[in-house]
Amino acid sequence: MPKRAVLLVNLGSPDSTSVADVQRYLSEFLGDERVIDKPASAFLRSVLVNQIIIPRRAKNSAHAYEQVWTKDGSPLIAISRNVRAKLAGALGAAAPVYLAMRYGQPSIAAVIAQIAADGIADLLLFPQYPHYAMSSWETVVVRVMEEVARQAPHLRVTTVQPFYADADYIEVMYAVAAPLLTQPHDYLLFSYHGLPERHMRKADSSRAHCLTVPDCCDTCSPAHATCYRAQCFATTRAFVARAGIPAGRHSISFQSRLQGEPWLSPFTDHEFERLPATGVKKLLVMSPAFTADCLETLEELQQQGRDTFLGAGGESFQQIPCPNDHPAFIDFLAKRAGDWLTRVRA
Image (tube, rainbow, N blue to C red; front, top):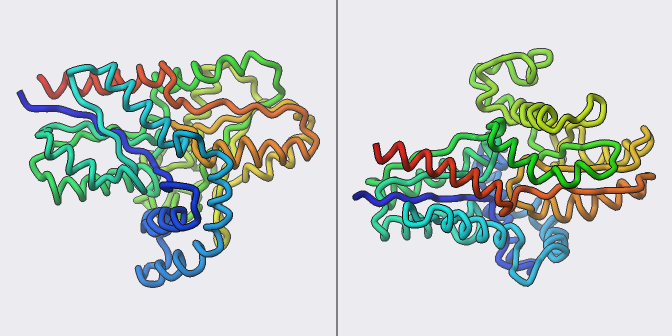
């Protein structure tokens, strides 16, 4: 029988919190043309990333990683390893489960080499991103397929599409959030990873809908298949409906941005400053763009965000964890993998 396997891919982390390791990681991450895609010249992008952005950010980023580093190293890597192990346990002999990171270790190139050496013939690629974005879901798929073409052209790859509004995934989010939703709170803020507005327009093949049509995310369009912003709104609508969050007690914001061009707004840090003045004293925050807690959720939100909100007059700040290795998330992954195994056996 042909051998089948599952490959989970997430973002990645530096090897350590040393400035040198963080510089090396940022060079790979920010050097990805789907993350920073301008200027068009690869040489000029390299100059921008390696001579301007990284020298300014590496020391601060290393300090930020120090705030969340654990005895097992990077939280994202440790959580991802747990997810891989638990999914492997759920699937048993039906399919081995591999884990790779888009940036850093274990690298996609090394893991594809191992998959090829293990004689795998059919592979389910499961990017650990609920939403489409050229700088997340797309770059994972492209990088994996580059290595498959180079190292294992015989390998048949099936890719799990973005699951931002999948009813089963919304149920995962609700299962994780439910314990905190029952506690007293005034408001729920959905904080998504930020992207340049230009990326929305670039992903719109029509070049005539995203951020062009009034209420573009609420106006049905094929562009939504590759529109990160529209998919964030769709996730929020689905979760709000499932959890029964009243109108007027929730909103969306976007965190993390670079200077120099318009990014998706409103900005999360600005919302932390604004909300207490509107009467929001007890805040719940969740980060639906991430399946595993990472630097952005653990340091930027839980630490910096909490300090900003409380400093602006808030009284209580609670963050809903990412799915991480919650049993409901493992069940979700196992179900999708099981459905695929059933199809490829047919």
